[in-house]
Amino acid sequence: MILEGKRLVITGVITKDSIAFHAAARALEEGASVVLTSFGRVRRMTERAAARLPSEVDVLELDVNKPDDLSALTGSLRDRWGGVDGVLHAIAFAPEDALGGRFMTTPPESAAAAFQTSAFSLKALAAAVEPLMDGGGSVVGMDFDATVAWPIYDWMGVAKAALESVSRYLARDLGPRGVRVNLVSAGPLGTVAARGIPGFEQLADLWRVQAPLGWDIEDPSPVGDAIAFLLSDLSSGISGEVIHVDGGFHAMGTDLD
Ligand SMILES: NC(=O)c1ccc[n+]([C@@H]2O[C@H](COP(=O)([O-])OP(=O)(O)OC[C@H]3O[C@@H](n4cnc5c(N)ncnc54)[C@H](O)[C@@H]3O)[C@@H](O)[C@H]2O)c1
Image (tube, rainbow, N blue to C red):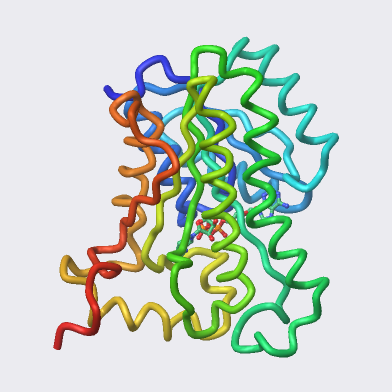
C-alpha cells in the first residue's frame, strides 16, 4: 500500500464524479488517513459524496479564498494529526463571463476572480499546510494543459497557465523543506466544473480523435491513480513537474484519423 501512514488533505470533492473523490478513494485504498474540505452551501453535497468513500472521512470547512478558513484548517490539522504528509488542490472556479468564448469581453474582475480561486489559491493552500510538513511532503494540483490556447476555456486557461507557474515557484520555495509540488494535467472529465463550461463537449470531442490510448470522459480513475503516485514516496525525486494523464493526447500533433 503506497500511502500507508500518510496523512492527506483532499480538497475539491463535490460529487462522486469529482476528480478529488477518485483521488480520495484511491488514497484510502492505499492505506492513507484522509480529511476532505468543503465550504458553505456545497458542504452537504461533499458530505453526501464522502459517505460513498470506502471508509468514513471528516469534512473540514475551507473556502480557499478566506484567510480565516485557512488558518482554522492549519489549527484543526495540527490538533488532529500533529502533521500532514500531502495535500491535493482540486479547486477551480471562473465566473460565467470568463468562459465559453467570451475572452475578448470578459471584465477584469472576472479574470481576476478566476486567477484567485484557481491559481493563487495553490499558494494559499500550500502555505496553510506546509508548516505541518516537518518530515517533508507532497502538494499536488490539477491542471488542464495551459501551454496552448483552447476553444471556450478562455480565462480559465489563463488561470491554469498561472497555476503552472505558481507550482514552479512553490517547488522552488518549499523544496528546501523537503516539500515537493507537482501538477496532474488531466484530459477532459465530465465533472460539475467541466459540464458548467458552455461547449465542454467540443473539448471532449478533440480527445476522441487525438488520444492514442483512448480517453473516457466518465472515468477519472487513471487521474486518481497518478495523484496517489504523486502523494506517495514513489515520487520523492519529482518536483515542479506537470504529469499529463490524458491518454497521450498532448504528445500528438494532430488527430489520428
Ligand atoms: N474535469 C475536467 O475536465 C478537468 C480537466 C483537467 C483539470 N481539471 C481540474 O481538476 C480540478 C477539480 O475539478 P473537477 O473537474 O473534479 O470538478 P468539481 O466541480 O468536481 O470540483 C471543483 C471543486 O472546486 C471547489 N471550489 C470552487 N471554489 C472553491 C473555493 N473558493 N474554495 C474551496 N473549494 C472551491 C468546488 O467546491 C469543487 O469541489 C480543478 O482544478 C479543475 O480545473 C478538471
